[in-house]
Length: 315
Image (cartoon, rainbow, N blue to C red; front, side, top):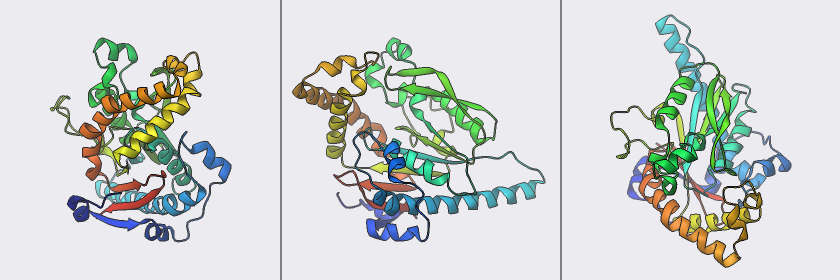
């Protein structure tokens, strides 16, 4: 890992892994090995030690912040002389394709549910807010999937506004990585204590390709934001490795949009994945995702073995 840039040095407290792990204090480990295996991504090297050293201190920090927000809401209700509907504490998790955002989100969800103050913790990914495949095709955006313009921003903003307002039974679209498309089925979010929202675009705000009169954006509704970080050469290697494993897993399903990739040789699969990274995912990372990193409240930096080696907490 390279050293922190001047902006990070000015904005963040930097913790090496050992120093961060000490902030766990007495928070108990509530996951076992089998539960962890169900949460991890397809090519991620994660253990209960990683949960103990990295995620338990983070769970403790978030619990303190959630409690503080509840106190603040009670003060505002007392000041206004009314009782507001329960509003969730919203956590966003951003980062590149293949960095492990989904695993981070699932582990946090499992840990935060164990705190008695906020047992209802929901997880939503922004993949469901991508335009349907037919619409992406008609707009000529199929090769720009994951870029800012490929998301239905109005739907995403309507969803997050309703959840933050304490509305009941708010519908979130679901996404299938098999069909590469939005599903008909939806996920109902019913006033959870905590909402985790994970995706490439959760920290993006000032995007030239979007209507600049549309304000605010998702990041304005988030109470705590996390960016999972790694060097691009590592990200590309992880993406290629994941592609190879998908070729013999999800891609082998005849209903998969990418079934044709299952017939590639090893060399062809590596070349295909490398080209996808160079022409799509890497470009999106540099243009739209990485520039949002310093907006995050917490940056988790991964080393080449997929383990987190540093935590940068915004001052």
